[in-house]
Length: 295
Figure 1 (tube, one colour):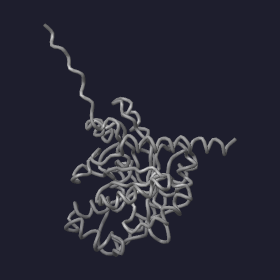
Figure 2 (figure 1 turned 90 degrees about the vertical axis):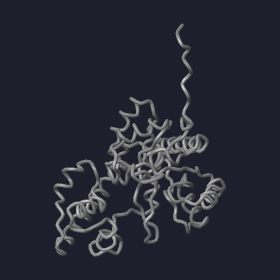
Figure 3 (figure 1 turned 60 degrees about the horizontal axis):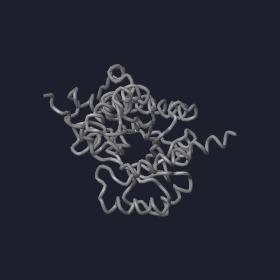
Figure 4 (figure 1 turned 45 degrees about the vertical axis):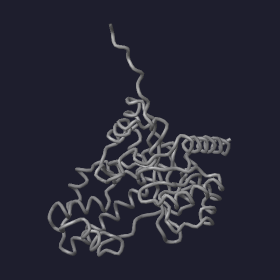
């Protein structure tokens, strides 16, 4: 007698989403295809690729997502500035071919190129050698950043560890650091909304004030991360309460960069089905608003 087949066990993460993930196209260690496979392996229903200031990973990830039957949420993390302070604005459910957003990311990437070239020149003046052409060959799709320079300096034996590299040379206030290119925070929100997406505040600072979040919301912010690496539960609960009072979606994600970071593998921190539905509804409203503006 044939054994009766047991129904497949449904993953507890089937309705959840990791909404903050990076790939090799910015400063992550995994390719877009690897990210999708990792998400599928833990049973996630959806994953958002939110690379820094680039959209190039979304198309290859979409092909893999279709193969594995997982939802890929097109996203981005824009480097922005408020009162001289760097902040990051997430975008979810964006049109990744939106010409205005694409042009803005192209400009940011070019400014990043000039920044890294200036830092390499300053390292040379201090007697440290970085082969930028070789780094670009190895990481052909990535936006080259300080992490890549640090890897070269440590692996070539010119500096003994990563902490020393950033503390003395590459970190904020380091000998060769050049300020990162940033765009005004209102512009970042507008870019995401014009591309049909929902703008969200990534890893909010612990000294965030409710009045500041209200100002963001009035400018079009639609979401805020309430859970992520290192976020205290009490602080996250406070941010969720503020989000509810302001009509924002409460979202969460791992801010995944590499699988060697404990507690930060893809799917370790997720957005619930209810919160994802709220975010999706806001995205639908944003699309309708954009379409209305174009009529």
